[in-house]
Image (cartoon, rainbow, N blue to C red; front, side, top):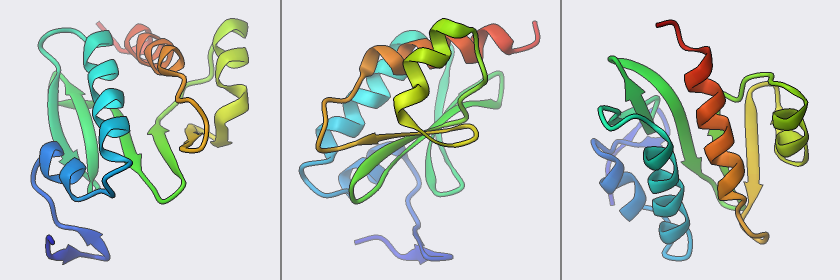
Length: 124
């Protein structure tokens, strides 16, 4: 197990983060990661920030994701057009946060939509 840093696992890479999760959660987190990377530009980076997996672009965060006991979270989620709002509404937990319950099928298409919306809002 990894040492703790402020109550969080002190992991250095996304691979370490995923491997430290319960076995049933690992493939879900890996697929979330791959979904985000497929929707992001090829130059997107990967790091750990605030103790959770972070996909970056131009040395700034693009999106964070995390595994929890009963759900996967995705942050931040921008306010969007009606189509995006309808897609994310069932999963909104708080402003800017989505929670995907592990007992339900993960809507990977919604993750792709969120990444596209985040990219569209980035300054050129």
